[in-house]
Length: 363
Image (cartoon, rainbow, N blue to C red; front, side, top):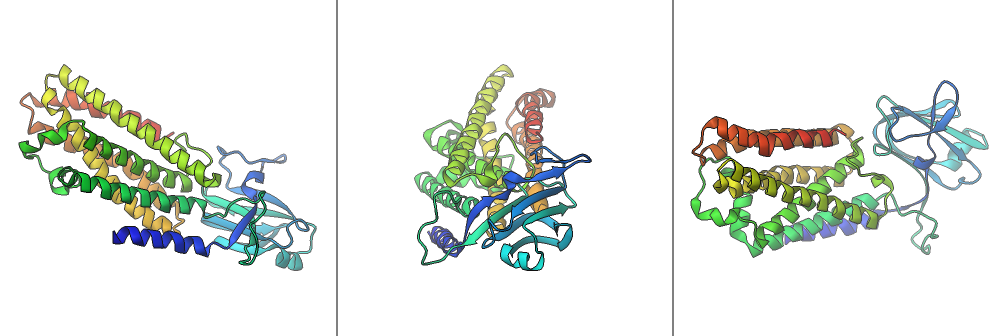
């Protein structure tokens, strides 16, 4: 309960500190340069420099806001203004006093590939506390994704507390790290290995957790996984994307159940199917659960390092690979067939899907 109250406090404290409304998202007007001319920026380009044109008179009372995961150099009309900065705000009015021009042509350079997920550029105005609601044409503040993430984390915490209270025995078994690495488990827990309403709740929780983990990773890296527009999406579009992605993960889990049961019958080891899938979900809950906590803490504290998000994403294949080895030894203690027979079963149920998942993650 204290954790829930803390998350609520963080959510409202963060919302109270938001001071900016976005007048124009400059990401939509980025340009890149080739040897011939400037052209609109493409998401799949390998550009390390982007160019932005800003009419001074139109936005004289506003601020240029830049948030980057990597250090940048900024040039204004060919003059170096900043070098090695990540996050900065500049008054257009102040800049116009130092660099007299009717139009600012800004260049942002990075040593790494620039994408709309690792660089945000806005023209924004400060919110006055006495002011009325901003015009409908204004975009919501740049804190939308963080607000969504905190809300989603709160939902996950409430969901988890609920299913733990509903079935504490099953919850203790799912989150037991000792049993995860043990080759011998009590036969009295065999009813946990069936697909019931209680286990389905854990499948749903696992799907929601993995979906949120992937969305935050996608937000700050060049990874796509078929999910586009997260950096500029509205709050409710983010919620819809989260639920849709969760549904895909849940479908994957049920497809895996069917595959495991069918192949276990084919190999004559039907009795290990439920135990096999139970431990697969268990390792996802424990490992990705820990990574999600680390990720959320880093993100809520305004962590912007793209290398950190890339590292967490890169751990997913290692987790799945470690599970294949661990699963082989756990099943070996329950199967009376030869090691080669069990290895063939693992290849059909885990190794082939593993390569398919790696291919999807690397797209």
